[in-house]
Structures are given as structure tokens and as C-alpha cells.
Length: 310
Image 1 (spheres, rainbow, N blue to C red):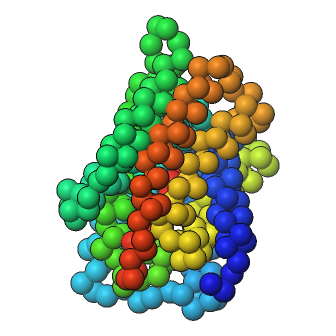
Image 2 (cartoon, one colour):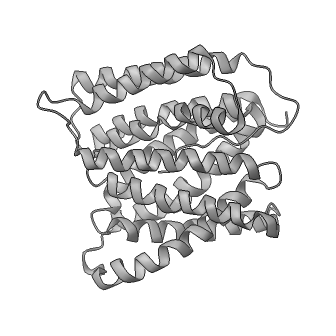
């Protein structure tokens, strides 16, 4: 490999830290902007960043006419439905709960892959899934009277999860013919076009920049450049140098990073039960990946696994 293994691992871990901060950044952005406005501005920033990067390094592929439908479908499920579910969901749940729910994506993807592509699951995959969902329940059931988070917010977060799983299935179809940055750049572009009507109808009449803060603007910029740009580029390097499976396992760090940052920056409570739930989620995620790490890498190109894009 052209890059040292240790250097690539360090970059991937750094990317996970950046992604963990994205859930906290949304909370700061939401102080001044409504959810759809945040998504609209975020996608705008990411488009300039991704297309600029792709053109500069000549990594932008031309889309074939027969694949336009797949790119459109990809944009519909993510970012459109994904960001609607995540953005509104995060207004009803804490950043930590949101990050942990999103972190279940890698566990649900294998089931969809088996149904659509007949990719086999191992007993460890099933066991890890059960344990991780148990951890999610422990985190959200932090009060004896019921859900610590609004059930509607939890439901919206799972809409985002299912959208991300659908996105991964479409990417599996496109990954052999297009560079990852091409897929992401056009995903953001088509997604932005889908959000334009909602932004014009629901957001423009309510825009009020008089209450915009420096922190909220920085948060939106962070979400566009890091959350949808630099982090994806880092993960692309990880997938190519380490393999998709070995890179994907580092996504398990996201809920931990978000919980720690939320405790210090958002003053979220960190009761023992939440700490135990986070531990259970992480152990379940790790357990689900153990058998995958033992599988030899295929000689052909590996599919791109979805990484949470907060």
C-alpha cells in the first residue's frame, strides 16, 4: 500500500471523531435554523466542496444515461428521506440517542443485502444485531415511566436508518462503475434539487437571519464540509486501503464520541444506565463484525458500505 497502515487507521479514526461531532453540530445549527434550512444549506456547501475536490483531482465520472434512475432513487432515499428523518428526529431526541440509533445501520444492511443479493449472514451477525438493539433500548429507556426521548423522534430516526439501508443497496449497484466521490457529489446535487420546493414553500417565508449566531453558521459549514465532505473522503481512503469491512467497524466509535461531546458541550446527562447502554451497543457492533474480519478480501472490488452521514 502506498500509505502506511497505521496512518490510514489514524485517518479513519479521525473521520469517526468528525462524524461524532456532526450530531452535536446539528444542535448548534438548530438554534438559528429550522431542519430543512439546515439540510438545504448543508447540501449547498457540500456540493461546492465535493465537486470542487472531484474536479481538482479528476475523480468525477460522467453518469451514463441508463444509470440516471439509480442516481435519482439514491437521492430520494438519501439525502431526501434520510435527512428529513434525521433532521426532524434530532429536534426531538438528544444527540447521543440520535447517534446510537443511526449506528444500527451497519447491522441492518446485511439483512437487506441477503434479501436482495443473497449475501449470507453469520450467527455472529444475528447475535450482534440483537445485542446492539438491546443497547439502544437501554439508552432510550432511561426513565421508568417510558421513553426518555419523544417516540416520534425515535421513529423519525429509524426512518433515516431505513433510508440509509436503501441507499447502500443502490450504491452496491453503482459502485463498480463510479468513484465514491462521484456517487456522493451527484447524490448531494440531486438531493438539493429535491429539497428546493420544500425550502421555498416551508422555509423561505420563515427565514429570519436576525437571530443567526456565529456558532450556528460555523455548525452549518462544518456539516457541509466535514460531515458530507472530508469524512467521506477519509472513509474512501480507508475502504480502499483497509477494505470496506475493516473500515466500517470504526463507525462504532461515533456514538461514543457523540456521547462524550454532548456531555461536555451540550451538558447532556450521562447516567450510569446510558453508559451501560452505550457499552452494550458498542459490544454488539464489535461482535457482529468479528466473523467478517476473518473473511479473506475478495479479489474484485468491494462494495461501498454506508457510513452514517449526520
